[in-house]
Amino acid sequence: MAREKTNGEWRVANGAAWHVPFAIRHSLLALASLVFSISASAQVQFATIAARPALWTVHSTGATVYLFGSVHLLPANVRWHTPEIDRAMAASSTFVFEAPLDEAGKAAVADFVRRNGMLPQGTTLRSLLPKKTLGDYERALAVTNLTPALLDGERPWLASIVIDVSYLQQMRYVVADGVDQQVYAYAVAHDKSVRNFETPEQQLSLFMPKSRALEIAEFDTDLKEFQSEQASIGAMVDAWGDGDAKTVGRIVNKELDSVPGVRKILLDDRNKAWIRTLDRMLTGHGTYFVTVGTGHLVGAKGVPALLRAQRYRVDGPPTR
Image 1 (cartoon, helix red, strand yellow):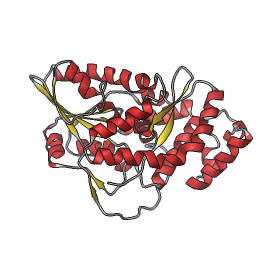
Image 2 (tube, helix red, strand yellow; image 1 turned 90 degrees about the vertical axis):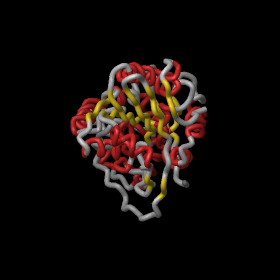
Image 3 (cartoon, one colour; image 1 turned 120 degrees about the horizontal axis):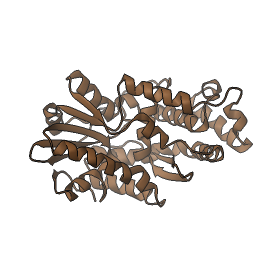
Image 4 (spheres, helix red, strand yellow; image 1 turned 180 degrees about the vertical axis):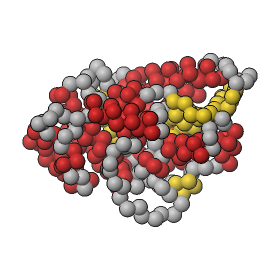
């Protein structure tokens, strides 16, 4: 598989700026873009690419949990259904996602954006930007074919997401073609029960800087780097499509480990919280199909490794 890839900028609650892989950051882009009015570029037809993503199976006395790693935005020509994945989906009565993808979830995202993403009346995005940043902003608008009017009332953190989503759509990465959306559509069509690990506010809050100065500085960084994103997502999607969890882990770990502390906030702490929910599922009865970002499933502190540490039997590919 040959595709494209992405680097990005994360923000955390202590006010620091973090450089993290798009493999983690794009979960926010997928969530937020559900309510953004951005027209996708005309889709060029490409030959279908057959992917073979990894699937983990967790066993307990009365329950089975399938763990499926998602690529939240995906080109339309990638086909990832395999007989193993299809059997697991058909056997599952409950589907679990990172955050809600239904209409209520979209409404929650829109509400968060209204409360936290808009500038005060009379303040414009352009008026906040230093001259050098303003030049980068003009170039980003030209590249993405966005109009200033679309973004002028938005805070920099939100405008950055809109620019990222628009650019990735031009590169043929579309949220509607992402794994989460396709699995969710299957669950709804087959009348499956749906659960979520987090709320939209919990996810979106991770990306919102706590100070105006930091927010503008990070917006400047994003403007300089957003076009490089297609390079990094490609390597990750290629490895994901080949079922190569070890390579996905190396890509995610290399970039996460470049900045101390970011892994704990964006992966490890969330994985531990999810494990408590999964443990409750596994001590009961039922069959669950869990779809989360692939970065959460790889490495020594990934969800499969944590479940093995709790003495659950986990069948699946090596991740390190």
